[in-house]
Image (cartoon, rainbow, N blue to C red):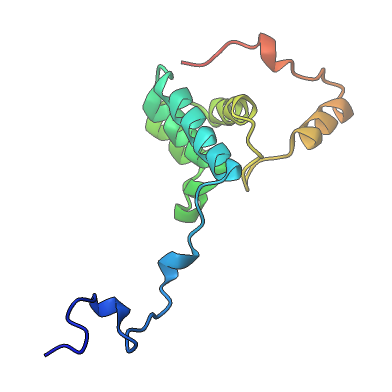
Length: 133
């Protein structure tokens, strides 16, 4: 027979609690929500693309995810029937439109502008360039 028949087992003096990792999880904060909004922006951007496979591959290349599998611009270009330069230009467009940092294989925009000035070429005005595919 139980010593306290009208009480729950957790009320017994011998009941114990051991810490569980789920106790450390904090509720979503504004910063977390910003990350969710950012992901939604990327997904909507990719959804609106006319050539999703190309844009998705270039997005992965731009963010450096394809670097883990040693995928190069040449391989992406060959897969989609484009040139390396077109892939690079599209990568810069995606980087600028989604406000991303340059990936591990990309030059910083300031460095590209500096190279153009040193070669006496005008700076590229991306807002007037034709969109791809």
